[in-house]
View 1 (tube, one colour):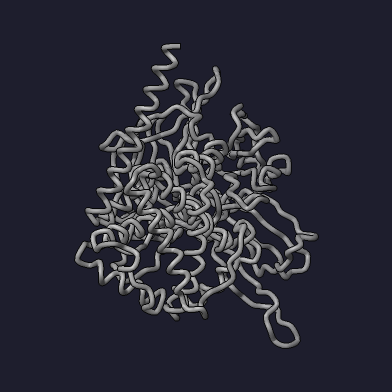
View 2 (cartoon, helix red, strand yellow):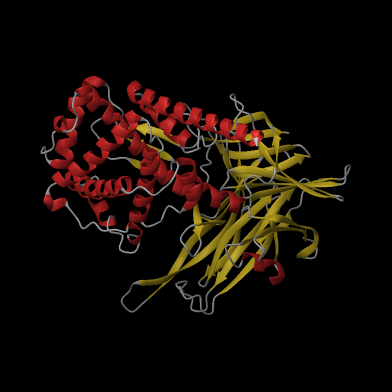
Amino acid sequence: MRKAFIVIILNFIVFVSFSQNNALSFEKVIKEANSQKAFDFVRNMFGLPAIQDPFLHFKEEGISKLTSFCSYLFRRVEATSLIKFHQTREFWTNYSNQFTAGKWNYKNLYKNDSLAWQAVNYSIILIYAHEMGHYMSFRFQAAPNTIYSCEEVLANECLAAFANAFNGYKKFDEHKRLFIRLAKETAEMIPDSNKTDFYVPMDKWCSPDPMSPFLQYFEKDNDKFIRLYGYSQYKIMDELLTNYKGGKWNDFLSNKFYNFYNQKTLKTDFSPLKYRVVSSESVKGIYGYNLTHEMDSAGTLSFYNYFYDNNVRYAINNSGKVYRASIETEPVGSVKDSQGDEIYSINNYLLNNQLHQRDTITMNSSFLYLDSNKNVRPRLISAWGSNDIFYYLMHRTTTPDSSLINFSREGQTDTLHFHRVRKDGNDIYYSNFVIPDSVAKDTSSVTGQVLLAGSNLGMPFLVSNRLTKNEQQEIKLYLTDTSSNEIGPMIWAGINKNKGYLFMQCPSVFIDAKSKKMIMAYFNSFTEKIYLIVISEAGSKSYTLFQWSANKAFGPQMQVLALHMITPNKMYVLANYKKPGNKETAAVKKMLIQW
């Protein structure tokens, strides 16, 4: 009994200390009026410090711009700057003019200018929490194309949970009370012509999406936009803060974001393996590719797939040379209707690979893949090779009506093709085969992939990665027998018995004949981590690669474009790389890492 009592006391002490530290830090950033430090405090509260997500960065907009923004593409939050004491009257006057056409007077709400000053910074920091809610949704819950009004409700749930994380501290209880009054008074004094219908429950907002029409006025009619937007936002904030149901802060974060994410991504499943960067150099002319989340039927992140927005892939060979493989579309004609409007185009499709060196990009080979095509849509899945030989894995969608506009998919066929392009002087030799349905079926849904993995043997392997009916990850490796133009035998298969799945990008295989081991590396774009599977006769074991930072935390993370293993413990990595903070911008680098 005594032991249990001691544990309870210790837990209570830790909780009180943690809460007090956060409250003191919150009070400090309010008074310091340093916007970057305030944003860092907020992101740390959300469990995403800069060392864990260096790509997320902050841009302050000054004190007169009262709209904030979260860019998913650039992973940037833009928001109003905190103010110094002498700027209090200037800020509130501008605030009143923008939202209420000058009707609202801050002196009627705050008993003195000192409180009015701190209230400004408290309110702006809550807006930082709102924008972090958008970002958390992007990283852990929903896709960027989620319905706008739904996302605004979620972001304000985060604002409300953040404000309530400091309940019980007299100063912050008063700040929250005054913020609720500010929301009520601002909404009430916004000109009637800018007031819209507001109704609860707000979880019914997704289908009608009442806030999306406001966006047509963004940066075109600022007064109209900020008042329409502000009215709805303040009504939502008032409702969620007055009738808060989110629970304790850590429980809110777990329930809203982390529990589902951890469950679906095997986040804590693998042993950590520390690496160091042996060498690093910038690579010009590579900008990466955008990735779009795949959604499940409930509208939340499936964690099973991404859609690529282009037909470009990158590869590294044994000597560290970087190649860009792509499908080039070359229009050669069109079919038009009786009115002269184009129904569909006729295209040539070329398979290209280019060699990237420090300051130059040169065409290595270009091959006419499809000639005057009308009814096939090719998509590049993955590629790997070197100067003389390049391998491509292609997905082909064929439609029967030649229009390529076949949303019903009726009569449409999907096939997976392996291509080998060999260059000998000015001559190019080409061969290909179709991946059999028994393997290609793993690409038939968002829960399966088939990819090429480069290797130290000079030939690629075929990797199948799929989610089983029991929600377990199953990986298979096949040889690619280019001499007989058919897929080779399966050489390994493994299932992770824990539930969860890691979407795979840029796999690379190293065969270690001496130790009779096979090592496969791959990148997952949801967790933004590199994983290793070490396979031997005794079984297999998985690892998560990480680099110690200065403060002994995990990171920094990378957005990987290509991997290639050259020894059992060394690998080339081509990645969009950024150190934490705003001093360094993201850049594509080729690194040699060792563990």
